[in-house]
Amino acid sequence: MINLYLTQIESLSIHRIGNKSKNEGTFLSEQPYQLNDELNELLKEFFFRPFREKEENYFRFDHEVDLEYNELYNIATEVFDNPDNIHQQSQRITKHLYDQSNHPHIKSGEVYIAYLSDVVVDNEKMNAIGIFKSELKHDYLEFEEKDSNIEILIRHGININKLDKGCLIINTNKEEGFKILSIDSNRYDTKYWLENFLSVDALTDETFFTKKYLKFCQDFAKDVVLPAEDKKQEVMFMNRAVNHFAKNDEFEETSFLNEVMDNPDLIPEFKHYKTEKGPKYSIEDVSTFPIANKAVSDARKKIKNVINLDTNIQIKMDFINPDSAEKFVEKGWDEEKQMYYYLVYFNKEEKN
Image (cartoon, rainbow, N blue to C red; front, side, top):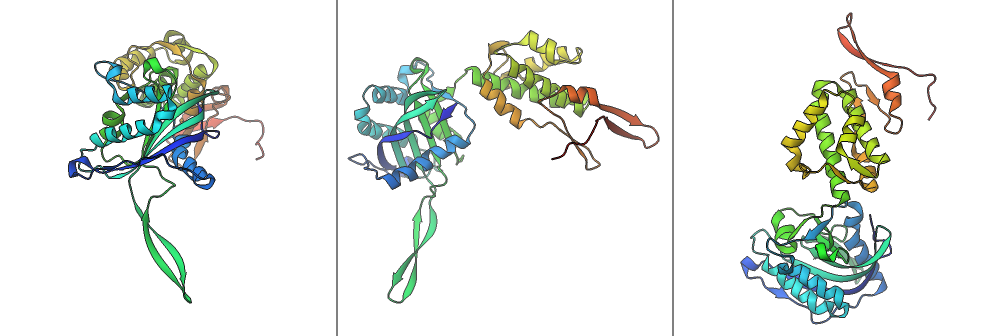
């Protein structure tokens, strides 16, 4: 889990790049930018907000031959070894980004390279390199008193509430390619930022596998459990799956299936579904891994535990006390009305 509330910008360099295919060129600042307190706070919010709002999916630097051939990996290593030299390295980063700006849709913009301290990852303070780019420009109005009237001035600039592109290279896991977070709000060329510039691959750690396996289970519930049984059993399957993850530190697939699969006949279906769909989630060969508690909590919030009926009624199942749904909710068929029904038992209505 990353926490950026205490993070400080120790150094900031600002450059500008154009589209290389249009021969727009670059502008490299000679010196780092000197921040004042007001601008410092504005830029911290501009740079960091997207990472606080976005789900954490970590990457690492990669190269098809060897990690040492990854340009940004080498630059990041030099910066962490000698932070005082970051402005010169920021020029190298900007030139590297410019070299990848060949697609005709890539927009010119400002590039900000920052050296960051007190980035808290899993309760440990670390340093990081922030690389950010603003691309889209917006019209805005300014007002100026002139003689006895107020004049409207049309300006052109960036929206500091929306960062177009950014990444945080965190000084940990160096041998594996560091730990990297990335955001890209403008997906007109998805390969430009992640593949061509950063050249990264997903960091396959416990968080990655926990998220992927739970998403796989969610799709299995929808594609297999729901058609074979009903909506209640789909919800209850995911209920049991999430609770199994929540109460264990290590995942072991056989134990998971024995506990979670209420209908043993679906176990072969699960294994077949994993063989067929597993590569999509990168879990085809995974049957054991450490469980990331934060990823389980995040997944629980996203999983729908509601049965929507065509009579405009909703039944919400409780993920905290799953036994209640098993004991006190029954499904049946009414011959007279020719309709399904749910029978719900209770002692009293709870007051809000």
